[in-house]
Image (tube, rainbow, N blue to C red):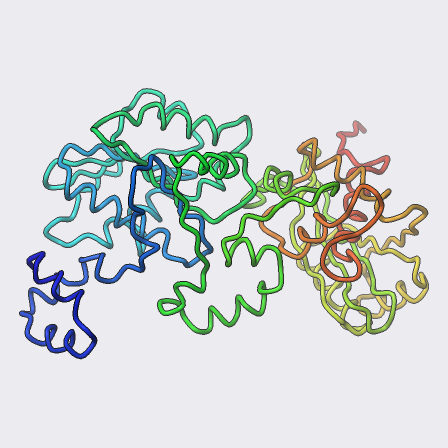
Length: 442
């Protein structure tokens, strides 16, 4: 389709547009879907002006990947000398999401302008000679030598920050971004409290970084109604929902024992190491219709690292319901023991749990110190990198970040039930006398 006809289409009202589309040939109609400016929302298009970094900081489902793929495609089409870096958390993610994904470069390319993808060489080559290379943020030295004219970096907030790898990858990329007259980079990400994210936010004041913000709901026309309904119900009232859906970079609470940056540093995508022991921590509701029963499953690896495996907490449960949830969690994770706080009627807690599962390995614990005093050594485990989260646990993490060093609780709800359950589990696994697995000679 000629560019002047496209501009004409963009200027039409709906009725005129339908008539115009009806007069197009079948080839023109097939070509139409590859004209990104026709379908894109304004926030998915590059900002005007002189900038070095365009940061799209938005919720999941916003359309960040599509915006990145279309930006790369536009550059490759216009500049046969373009050398583009495609950087993700891992090579597999770059390939699966940025290149071959449903909104990736290959899916958005017209057949006549489809780049040739050579997985073994980690390279895309367009018919006009433009190229893109695939890189992993976990291997910052791979970007030490190559030069590029442009770069698309995906999910920078989840790049590996251990040993400063994420920042080193970004620095090496920026130092090699020196080809052409106007080298530029695009970073697409969901906001998380990572050092690189905060750094780019700070640099926005200088004008070299332009930030586009947005939420999942900006793209509601292209998302299933059931998905929108379910995520609203599950995460709409949580801090994680504000971060992952609304695209808000959450501020830290001054004086909290846990920070979001600390939790991010301790997060792992999945639990792969064998577990020496698994326990279920339980903070029972104080009354028969209490707000919540905290139920946290945690394990200890052979090298002595604690791992939060699951949050099975239940809201406003009957005694039978929360006891059944504890029993189900213990069976599902083959737990060695259930650790339950018994300050609020120890005999009642034991009898309710026994009724749910007579064989449940149960240990009742009594709080001789306040919540904060019990939580402080567990927070120290996180600071030392000895406690990990195998996934994201929205409501648990909200509560952890609300426990204040001064003794108060400033998180969601009346009480940090999930956080208390985690604290009991961590004490049993890592702060008791037999917390570290040992090889015993017999």
